Each structure stands twice: as structure tokens, then as C-alpha cells.
Picture (cartoon, rainbow, N blue to C red):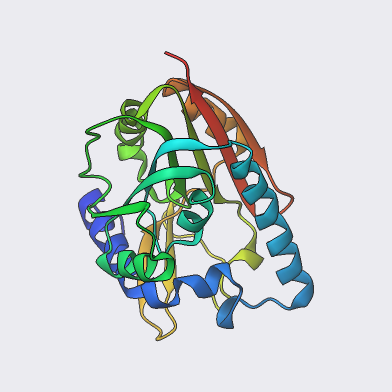
Length: 233
């Protein structure tokens, strides 16, 4: 059954609040996400490729991280950013992020990304594993806000998932629901319905060009798609 965008956003926020304490298990291949040595090594090798691409941006002053989560990529941004503003809709993930990094270079804001409006411009706007969760009817308005938050000559960097079944939990259902939706299960068995859209490189390229950025979209062999873009006007 189709769900309203408002209900979907509410459920997604609740899902990531409830998942906050176990989110890192996905990234670090623990528990239900442990796929064995060979696949785990493949995963981390591809993570390293994306991390290297992010570091190639070099040093920047002001960074905005949208949907900052538990700090996995905030930690990477600390290597290149003098100041980071991290926004997330989950107070639980913000607390984990803050306790993990304990850095005075990071300022946190608890806010629904869809309700966020840019109040200033940044040298770099970054979001990871977020664009795939933006419902199609909110995509253009979100990218417009990203454009407004990026200074002229500034950059964006986005990371997201490719549709490889071994990137997900071993008990994750392979069946998609209602096109853009997926059912996601927590360790305790609770299930939530979320939006999950897997973009192809040409689709992502067109999205950023239409939003006012020039850019370069790349993929790793199995798991990740990532884009670096520039705002020229």
C-alpha cells in the first residue's frame, strides 16, 4: 500500500532513531552484516577508495554535513575541514557522533533535513547514504537547498549505495516493495518501511547538473557510488 510522504519521513526518522545503537554494525561488517573475510575485505577496500577521493578535496574552511549520523564520515571530514556543522534528525545518532569524536571543530544541530533551510554558505556540502532516502517528490527542493548552501566556487560530495545484496544484512529481504520502498529489520526484529533509491551514474550526474553543479560521478566495483561537484555560478 502506498504511503504518504509525510508518513514515510516520520517512519524513516523513527527507524534511524531506533537503529542508532546498531548502525555502525552495518558499516564495520559486524553481526548480521558480517559476510565473511573475503567480502568484508572487499567492502573495506572500496571504502578506502571513497575515503581517498574525499581527502583529495584538500583543506577547506567551512563544511556542512547533512544527515551526519553516528560520525563515520564526520570523522573523515575532520581531516579536511576546519569547522563542520553537522545536522541530523536523530538526537540519538547525534549523541553517538558527539561522544565518538569529542571535537570542538564540530557543531551539531538536531533538525529534520526536510525542514532545514540554509542560512549561510559553505565551502563544502557533504552527505552520505542520504540521497537514496529522499522521496522523489522532495528531491528537487532538497537539491535546491544544497545549491543555496554551497558558496560560489564551493563543492559538494555525496556517497551512496549500489544495489549489491551483500552490502545489506544477511536476513534482509531481497524483494523490493512498491518500487522505491524497502522493508528494513532491526536486530530486535522490528521492521520499518523506508525509501531506498539506487541511482545509476548517469542519473546522479544529471541530478547534480540540473541542480547547478558541474561534477564527476564514480562507482566502486560493488558497493558505492560517489560524486564530487562544483558550484560555478
